Image 1 (tube, one colour):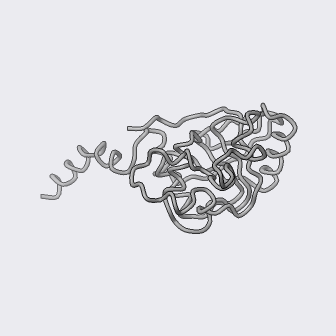
Image 2 (cartoon, rainbow, N blue to C red):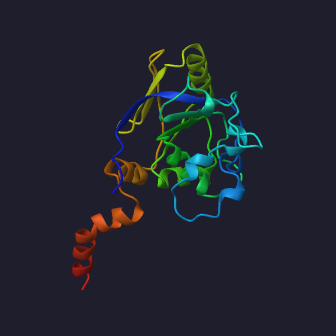
Length: 196
């Protein structure tokens, strides 16, 4: 069982770049491992570090002014290959929420499977978020899963977001797909008994 997801209020890490694909999120040369641990060290590796392995001071993850468990990304986040390692890297780094105006479908599902909540907002709301964070790096955002709302606390503006009801339940209960099935074992056994 994972940590149950309800409401998160956090400062944000802004990544105002469009069409960020999974190879940029986690380069292919780091896909050899099969466990989910350690991928956060190489999240956005080629943007975070130069060829000598030194942190690039101009990249946002290396800027101590920005922190928090919410990544605010540009439109079309997670395009490209379907590697689930990209979602593993996002989760392992410590992000619980990614906000964008559009996600690639498979990457969005991979994030949900890793207990990272992908929140799709309008382009206007996303632009406002980026502006608020640029004006004040301490800007906080509240993501409320029960009500399916995201709020920019700097402006008070709120938008609703959609989520698959089954995945919402899994996040709310802290269950992955197997754990969800096991939690319904008695219901399954009762149904099977009724069919004999």
